[in-house]
Length: 149
Image 1 (spheres, one colour):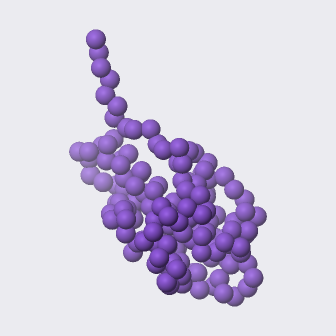
Image 2 (cartoon, rainbow, N blue to C red):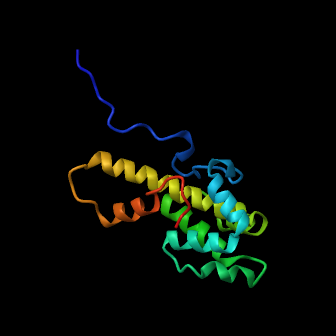
Image 3 (cartoon, rainbow, N blue to C red):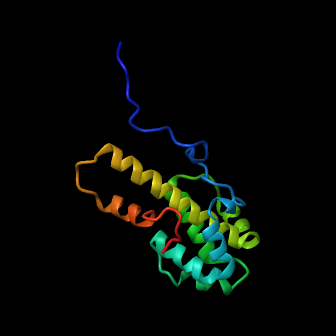
């Protein structure tokens, strides 16, 4: 009788391809970031933007017009990076009507994807040196419950 050992656990239902890993209103899944955004949203958005890899000052442009350009750009960038379904119209709606919730969702997505990428890359090659991609993702999720700093 042969036994098979499961090397990689199946991903959770929330991280199905083409979907956000958490819903827009699921702030309770990261209370620390929720409190941080509630107390100082401009600083929070700058930190999330820096974690995405863009200029940290980009969210300061959101106060210029009725449509927040940084929020739209970050949602579109994260959707494209992870193959999440959506459109510029949904990004615009979330950016205009649910601005803080949209940024919190982006933050949770970055953390969860980084954590799943780090765990999958460490299980697939534990003896090889980490690539720049792995180092970038592990830097985002080194403290899973912490803020994106």
